Image 1: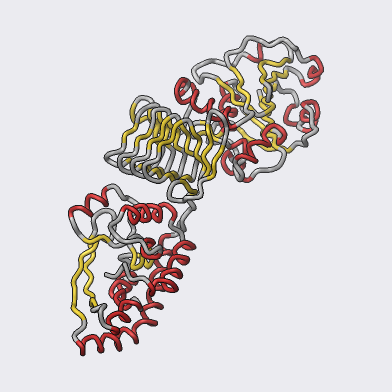
Image 2 (image 1 turned 180 degrees about the horizontal axis):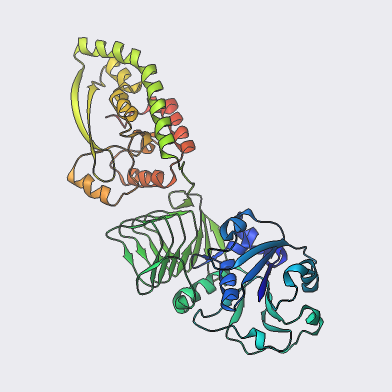
Length: 467
């Protein structure tokens, strides 16, 4: 027995408008693509091959499902036109359909089934017919493609149901239904930590975070101190939820950052947009410290360290002559003192010792020394050694208080220059802590370059961030 799954653009145009860049067939219900639920269903029905019929080829879908070996079914792909009827699709795919019983899923809908049920009784049906339908699609059993003109209008009693997907409210309602009442009916990604809690890979949960079931959390998720997740919360992959935020009866889509102390109830969060799950109304948040998209960082860490080291070498060469010259002037006038400082250089508590010269900023020479960032020469040496980054989080002095802070800050990666410094934010304030976490969530090569340029072009006019 084989299956055809057909999803047409006319059935899901609202999805591409609401979530640009997301293929509708890959919209996730409880962290699982919609199309994967449909494929699981046809497997339960005894199908050994499935053909996915889409308006246009999708590299994302083909990459995700591949040949189907991961799911235990042979997957192939075909295209359709908006005007194609079921008869036309059968004709276009006649080789695939030839001499086979067919299960056809046509439309854009969610299918409710139970993985424990035995659905392999279709071949006992003696006629071609419509087995179930909803306003946005139908499920057909085709005993013989020649009988398509004689589709029965009587629905057979079946152990599954279809839910139409016509709006974002439908996505929200079905997600909550699956999470709260049907979690055991499907194979969902992740593992069960406790009853009603499913976790993905690389999930970091702060020690003061509260997780109330039912909850599903995807891969590469960071939940920071005192956040409250659930009940009824779906967190997709690559999400950061900052300290104190509460997520209840809501969905947070992939690649979203939620700032501190937010209260989210009956909402869908997608990047910087928040949708009301009950009314469908949306609101774009312009304050990136509250909601924003997480952009992927450069994955080649060695290359990033190399780039940082080379840039530090160039800066050192540019600054070495004024460093020696102004340093001699400071020494002759006695307007400086040597200082040995200990900083944390990683979130695991690794430390770094820096010997530097601190100038007297009340004199012209002393002020020039710090304005030209000559006090950073010892830090640039540490960047070249690979101990810290050129651009990163603010360096934290070694103290018991900062050690406690690091335990709830796994993304901490210090640099010779910092994001807070670029934005001229006073160290030790709540604003600086928010800025540091924001940078950790969004750091990228482009952001680093932009912040470095900002420091060197505007930084000399503000010196809040001297060593």
